Length: 480
Image: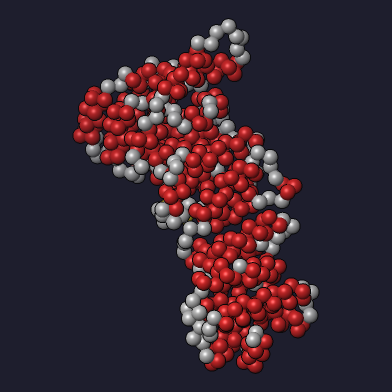
């Protein structure tokens, strides 16, 4: 996506909102309304000051900086911020906390870059693109730290701790985040762990930063949301329903910001810079939040998770490594056990089936998990039987895939036969599982032996049982 286009947002809507407030007379205003007016007046003032920036002197200044300080890229970045500080020095002090808390997120994400003239923006990002990447994450932390000095309890930064410096840092920070989204993804651990960024009052700033990055790269936005915002919901670290609302609004805006969002997110098969966008633990969190027990549904939140879930599920289930799919299968099998929640069990079963049909090596993983997840395995086996016509064509009768599935079924039958013989407590579950295993084996064998002779089958039985040929042959005959 062209970076210049992402910032090319007509500022007229923002400016008109400000003028509407400024021209509203005759009503007594509260302190909150006054603060809101001050925020919008500051935004309008920023727009008017930005319009006066001449791109030609800026270009000359940046060329001079590159020539003089070529060996000090960090100093080059500071000089860019200082230049904007001078140009925007007449902008009145922002009500920073009020702006982030009260200005609508749908408009806040376009502040300040929608107010910067395109030629000025383009000269600036061309300059940023010349800087070595390693200084940009540090610049992101420095600029955000400077802005957050306005929040109660945050340690002040001595250098450049002035109103015009904060406004300039705000502008350049947005440019860096949109131009180089990886500068944000690199510092996500800092944002999660550093005390400066903790607390629900800092949440709007984090969301604004993620929104800037997502304007430049959707996958960077989703990657950041999954790692830094989703855990706040799942761990009950949010202090209010408003915080949850902002977190959900953030991902809703990421997913709806581009009509090609689905294509763009699936283009790299759930991978960004070698890491998956939605790792299995995060996917499990999404499943649990979307399918909570009826008594745990959160009005206004659960429905919104249900709306975004299908696309996020598709991204999470994009073909990936064997280890990734094993991890997804493991948690889905455990959730399929029900835990008194039929909706969760059904969805988890569907996920497990999806992963099994993507990668039959998960059948081998299932063999390991079978006994300790018996109830879930019964449901999964039954679903495989019921949906056999949908899945059998993916298994060639002469393929290694078919052999893997058969091996798993024989392994399950060994466990079932042993439990039935010993009369264990969950006898009915083992009998039901055995019935499904027989049906699946019968259907597999009816499509051909898959190139397996009796000798090969016997060897398979021995491997599955770790025991005697006679018991395996008994099971083979009983499948006929």
